Structure formats: C-alpha cells, structure tokens
Length: 227
Length: 174
Image (cartoon, rainbow over all chains, first blue to last red; front, side):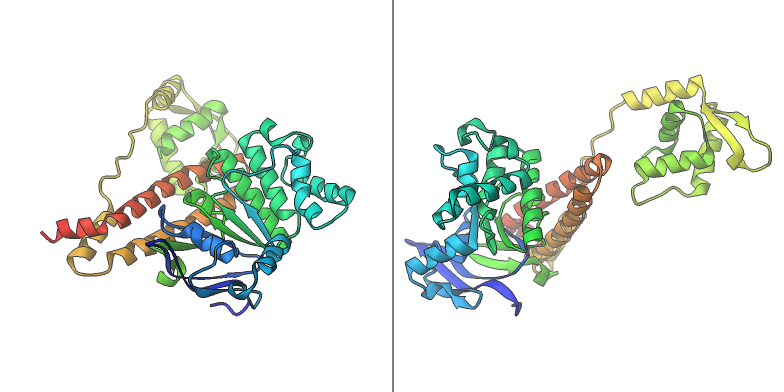
C-alpha cells in the first residue's frame, strides 16, 4: 500500500444478517487520485464506499483517514469529519426540494456556520464552475436530471473536501449528460487536489478515473496487480 | 477503409494535387496512421486507369506531385453508390478472447486472471481515449466515442464471461 495514502481500508469484513457484503476488502487512495470502484451488482462496492466514508462501520478491519482510525472514533467525531473533510454525490442528487439550487449548494457551508452572503458567493462560484450558474434561483424540481447532478457535485465540492465519495453519480443520466458530470467532477477534483472514490458499473464513466479497483464477492482486486 | 472512395469524396469537394489529397486524408481520417506516399499515388493511378478521376492541370516541371486531379462523372456515380450502400455489420464471431478462455480452462490455467488482465488492458485504452476526447475537438470526440463504445461492448462480454466461467468450465470439461 502506498505510503502517502490519504484513506486506507484494511481487510474489511461486514455482514448484513447472514449475507456477507464485504469479505476482506482492502484499498488505499492517495490525495488527488480518482479511483473507480467497479464490480457486478451486489458485489459489495457500495458497502465498501460506506465503510470508507464512516457511514457504516465494518465488523472487522480498519479504515484510516490521514493516519487516524475512523473505526475507533465516536459517532460525533465521525459526523464532524464527514461534514468537514468529505463530500458526497449520490445517484439521485438528493437535493433539498424546498431550497433553490444556490441554497442547496450553500447548505454545507451554512451548517459550518459560514455567513449567508459568503456561503452564497462560494456556492455561486461552484455553480458557475459546474456550468449551471443559470439554475441558481430554481428549485431542484425545475431543473433537468443532468443539471441537478451538477448542482449536487457543486454541493459536494463547495466545502473544499479532501475526499469526494460518488456512488453511481451518473447512474440516472443518459450517456452524454453522464459523461459531462464525470468530466466536470474529475476536472474539479484534480484542480483542487481532492481524491475521488467513484462507484460505478459503467466503464465509460470509469474511464475518467486514474485507476480501477474491482470488487467481487466482497473482495477487492486491483487490476494493475494482475497485469 | 476504402482509400479510393475516400479520395473520390475529397476530390468531389474540390480538385487537389496528390500531396494536398494526402494531407486532407491524414487530417480528417488518418488519426494516428497517415498514408504512405506510395499508397497515395498507387491509388490515384488506379482511379485514373478506371476513369474515375482525371488530371485537371499539370504545372510546369515533372513529377506526379505537380498534377492536379479532379473527379469525373463516373467517379461521382461511384462515390454516390459507395456512400448509399450500408457497411456490413461486423459479427465478431471469431473471438481470440473466447479461444483463449476455452484453452485456459482446458489446460487448467486461471481463466479468471486472463479475463482480468484483458479487462485492465481495455480500461487502459479507454482512459487514454477519454483523455484524448476531453482535450480534443468534435472530430476527436466522435472518433474516440466510436472506439469507446466498441471497447465498452468488449468489457461487457468480459464481465459476462467472468460470471459464467464455472458453467463454461463444466461444459469444456465434458
């Protein structure tokens, strides 16, 4: 494993009832790296992502973030870490429907007590960067799927996270819109030096990453190791 | 690709010297494989012989590069027929990969590794094409997308085969 890894999973095991979701998954992500996590449905890729993000604790194994053991932290510590250091993009944007797109993007900053004006200024910059400045005043229900996903990416990046977790971020989009979201997400992450952990089953989307890790039956396999 | 027909299409757009024709071909369709001069002049002399192009003008001095070529009526008919005719879809029934997988199973080698190695190779090329597409113009994007869709189809086959290896091993072992 790389010595300068930002986020490291070591031999993770996790069961949901009798079903093993992870059965010895290991992974290391370096700063500024875009890693695609691929594998068949039900292979454990989302569980791996959730363990790495501190959302689901593994039964055994460790997750270390910048040297700190995530699995040993309290729930409060983990929540604070997720808010400050991590960004999230899901398949369906999960934007707050009552808020405008601008307010949605500013929300993570407001939760960190950034003043409204400053938060909205930064949110506007990110909407502009994701090429959706024109939807700032609209509510999520009034924008297209592709625009909504780009708003969600802006919201994930607005706090300057060190790691962005993206779970099938293009899964609900057509090929052209999906690639646009991916190009902007990978481009923005590379500029800011954030690592991206991308779960996808689409190889065309994975092709925007720097490398792939395949999950099969709860175990990880780095393709580079095989070749 | 039919170089002759491509030349005819380019010449119908405007008469050109041999060198200009090669340059136009390389810029638009050559990608990483420019035409050799020998190929350009061999193609042009065949088109001349068949009456599909004619020498439009000859500039002072000798040498084939000074002739300007133009398409003839017969050439226009020929290129129109070619453009209107659908290309035969490639059925891809002779798969080297399939052969390799079966042979790996027959000889007790790890077929899953073979599929993974191939998968890594495909993804490497897909990343390269995606980078080229991201930095390129619309022509680059369309050409790269064509290749990317084919590679994606191969990858789906690799994934499907990986999930059926146990079943295939049983059938191969019979």
